[in-house]
Length: 512
Image 1 (tube, one colour):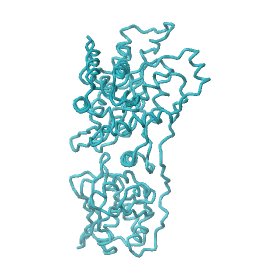
Image 2 (cartoon, rainbow, N blue to C red):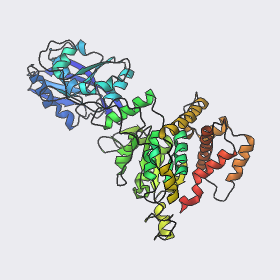
Image 3 (tube, rainbow, N blue to C red):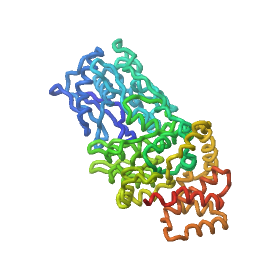
Image 4 (cartoon, one colour):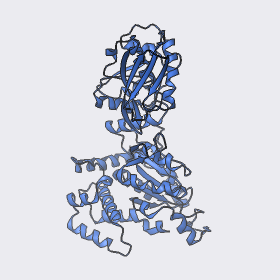
């Protein structure tokens, strides 16, 4: 009777969990059994492991092989456990000294000829390995660049089972070092420049305010006016991600992307189609939790074009993540907490025909139809949107002036945004927050109160029949601080308060 083991890991949601792999060889009917809540892909590892071991030049043990994956209560899925199972079987058969596998995390999918192919989720596993106390990780060569992003971790990139054996000190002449070809990419799609948008000075300013304070934004206007152009250029004026945040975003990308990626330093941008399901946008699934697009947009921008056309359950499911920055996927067998701190941008037409703001009165919709259309965006959802802008169709002379003038590029706007964010970082140093949009209203009023004269003006402006909710008051206050940061002031003045109210209210035109 022989027993040996090693360590591997699986990713549930975006969090890695260590899995101990034990292989036990005993007398009995020749065969292999895998225990520990293994799904179909893990069960099929029996054939992949056997073929890979034989092709590497080792005889298959003619014993009863039992592979245990612990903890037994944690569901195991995917093919990333193949290499660890193969090494554990060889160690139990006496081909490897078990001490060579100590304190080592092993990840990789085996091909039938012994090559090691890439898998998803290597970066979160590598990050977690350091926290678990491991100092060495064996990964497919295609995933080596990802794992190497983690400091203080010895990364061994292997191309085949035989190569992995040689790397840990076992004499094996079979197996090349090339691995599966898969070049990593270090960035997402190129971000267009704000200078390409003609006119729309007020909408561009609203975009700048949203970027400076991390505020959610809603754009209302007729078709073709430039709402999508503006939203797609928001990432171009956001600051690049710092090292820790870039690792966090890259780890999420490694879970959802088949192609290995390097370090992502640009804020991500996700724009689901309005027919996307709640599972696709929010995340979830029955047997295996899947990452949704709001998690893919973590630390970046989530853009919902034609927002009223989204299903009501999708829009309402955004309300909790907008407040907490996380989304909880709860099922009978598991509960997964996924990060979802994104900047939401909504774009909508003012009515079904889209011509409600037309100067020539071409709209054919009744007032009831207009209210019903925008009513698909529920009040609780819109209450969580800080900036609401009506994007008007530029007049012909404005388009001509914009065509002749040199528009301000994204780099110039990004510089002002970075300066405003630096002021916020200094103000909130020593707190869990870095942006105005993140600070709770009670904390903002207690620790950074408005000057007494500005506070009286603020209260007077709010004393009206359509007084906003308590959440709306807090969001106006945060907007005022962002306007002050952009203007270089140490605290908001009456002008900042008035500007914040205009940015949030949009003249009441969102109310149809």
